[in-house]
Image 1 (cartoon, rainbow, N blue to C red):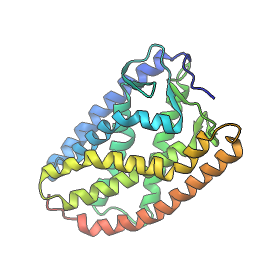
Image 2 (cartoon, rainbow, N blue to C red):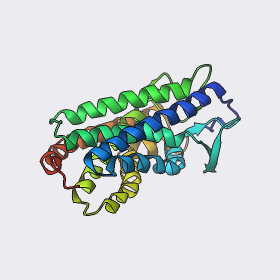
Image 3 (cartoon, rainbow, N blue to C red):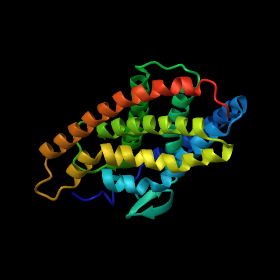
Length: 262
């Protein structure tokens, strides 16, 4: 299989993804700033900015999980691994990952979580990912990109494993971010969020998602539906092990972050 290099880009879908996502990003940043002023911390704003900055590493993700942004007419700011990057990746990261992480970390800070909250957060992020990406893939009269590899378990051309891994990495990022906030002695220490985001992002997508990535890239004729299905199911199994662990970690954070000193 080869990437759809010459596939036309639906310009209407591109415009909606660009202006819509950047508009929502401005709203998310305003909400984060208000939360920060209320709690006297730059934590929430930095949480969003860290996710946005992490989009510069999107080409690694595209290469691993076989995502191709349609190039003809793309509003791109750089290209890596031969994949042109649309400028809405940063705003997309802010909405899908930063905003969701803000909801999770705020809930933990307020102690408004239970043992089952991790599954609720997981489902919320999965739904957000499905809505955003199904639109991006299919668009109005055509999409802006596609997962062109031999993925299985697709819904409207969207491989569900993508959303499953995305939801897992947001939970991992949120828990690590809460721990950093609890341990930080100075607001500047919260800049560590810029390092934590790519660490948790690729730990989940390339670590937990390792089996499906390897299955996708096996040399022909080894790559088959059976191999990809097995790799996908194995990654899904690892996800639920991580979620079980994350639920215990989340509850451990509640008491420690109920009345943070910063």
